[in-house]
Image (cartoon, rainbow, N blue to C red; front, side, top):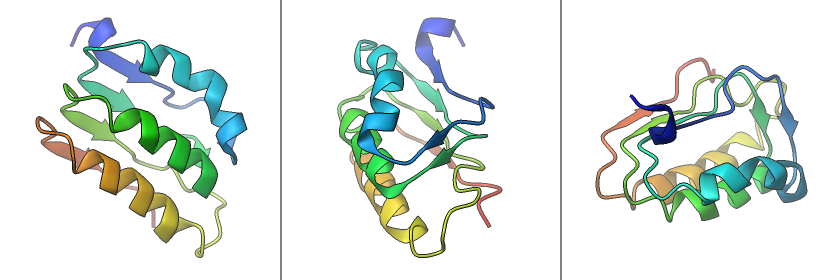
Length: 106
């Protein structure tokens, strides 16, 4: 897949707790009207960060693949359901999405 079709933060070891934490990383995603795949694994996302990310994802009508593997390392069990709810609610609105990878989030 062409690089302009893929948005990736994969494997950076980022700890993104708040909307402020993730905001600097959202610019390239926000400005890419034709993104087809996101790769977010290998980082950890808090509830507020997931909410901010979901707001941007909701606008990505060309998105087909969401790789959300290994995104809750070191998170409290109580954080995961609301974070997932934000992300999945946004993703399930997308008309071309056919794959969501949630592996390694046990």
